[in-house]
Amino acid sequence: MNTPEPEPYRDKDVRAGRNLPLSAPRRVMCDLLTFAKAIPTVPVQRDMRITDLVAVRDRLARARDAPGWCAIFTKAYGLMAGQYPELRRAYMAFPRPHLYEHPCSIASIAIERQYRGENAVFWGHLRAPEQQPLRELQAHLRRLKEEPIEKIGLFRRALLLGRLPRPLRRLAWWVALNSSGAKRAKRVGTFGVSVYSGLGAESLHQLTPLTGTLNYGVIQADGTVSVRIVYDHRVMDGATVARALACMEKVLNREILAELEQEARAQAA
Image 1 (cartoon, rainbow, N blue to C red):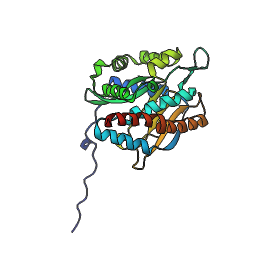
Image 2: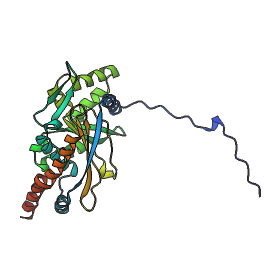
Image 3: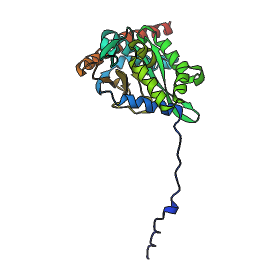
Image 4: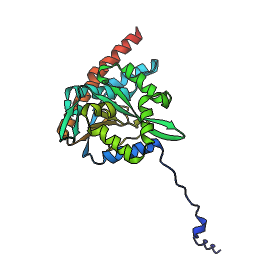
């Protein structure tokens, strides 16, 4: 039996695609990446073992809502940066190249929200996470994820920025990143946190205009997890970041574990 010949390809059979305008959040992301690609960033990773911490948090989660891993790692980074001030510094090119060191950490957390039918990324700040209880950090993160976008000041400002013409947006970004070290920390934070391990994936080398950005992978059943920091090589060197990650593992297994154990005891009482 003869197989029929396939019909020849014809251009008219192909449906035309469509052009989509960039939304305000997408414009802001494009601007961020424009400045980020000029930063000489390098990732450093450490495989950590936090078995006891996982067990205590799971026990809390079974009884009631426990602090999320984002809050836990963000506080651990803040405590670590207290011992390694390099992680609170930023490279400033204006008016002459120098480093600025902020007195405390300000975490810039990437939050995915629905905006006009589109998955969009906004950034919320946690100021001095090392000084706040995990419960308060978790409550603030929940607010960033659930409260209407229009009620969150940083989200509103991001949308206003995204609606400006591109030259004005790029000027605003340059001013935020270069005009003043203190204002830079207030506007964009001292470090970033961008995680999607809850979706079973992880990023290996994120583009960022910040001195350091934290990312961690899926926490395994034996309590191991890969934790990485993408850092600005102009501010510090890889050995410093490697030592800082070793410090973070100790912080997770000491200070953070002690806080969760205290909450577990209070819960049992």
